Length: 274
Image 1 (tube, rainbow, N blue to C red):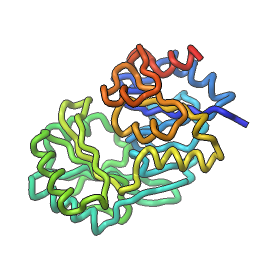
Image 2: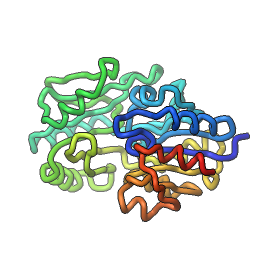
Image 3: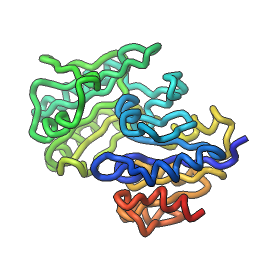
C-alpha cells in the first residue's frame, strides 16, 4: 500500500511559465509514483490538464476546476460541485449590467465527461488573449446570447481590476455566501479575474474527496502551491510547500518555502532532496 501522497498545483507551481513540464521534473516526479500517491489540484479543465501532463505519471484522482470536479483519468467522476442554471443565468445578467460577459466551464454530458467552454461574441482584449491559447479540441463554443447550461463548474470574468471589483461587490450583495468567489490578478495576460463557484467547490474539499476515495491519510500528504486558492489544502495536509515565486501570504502559511521557483523545477528539486 502506498503510504505517502503528493498533490501539486499546476500553474506557477508545477508548470513552468511557458506551461511546460521539464524532462527533469518528469523524471523525478515519475520515480516517486512507484511508491507514492501522486496527484494534481488545478483550476484547469480535464482536457487542458491532460494536455499539460503528457508524460507525467498521475495515480490519484484529479482535482480540477478549483475543486468543482474530482475525476479519475478514466473519466470516472468522484465528486462534483455545480452552479445551477437559475443562479448561473442571474450571474450572467448581473455581469451584463457592467458590460462584461464571462467564460463558462460546464458539463455537457456526464458519461463521456464532455466539458464545454462557453464564451460570448462580446470579448475584451484580455479574453481574446486567453482564447488564443486554446485549441480546437478544447470544446470552445461561441454564443450570440450568453446563457449557462444545467450543470456549470465555474463562471470566470476577466478584465480591469476596478470593473471586476465593482461586479464582485454587486454579486456578493445579491448572493452573499451562497457562492464562492476568487478575485485575484491573472498572471498570464496581465489583468484581473473573478471566478464564481459553488460554495463548496475548492481544492480543500477536493483533497478530502481524493483521500476518502483512496483511503489515504492526509497527515502523510504533502501539497505544493503558490496562490491563495491553495491555502485550504495547506491547512489539511501534513506538510505544505510553497514555491519561491508564491504569493507572500501563501509563503507565510507554508511549512516549507522553497528556494526554487516553478521555472527552476521547484517541486521536483524538493522531491529530489527527500
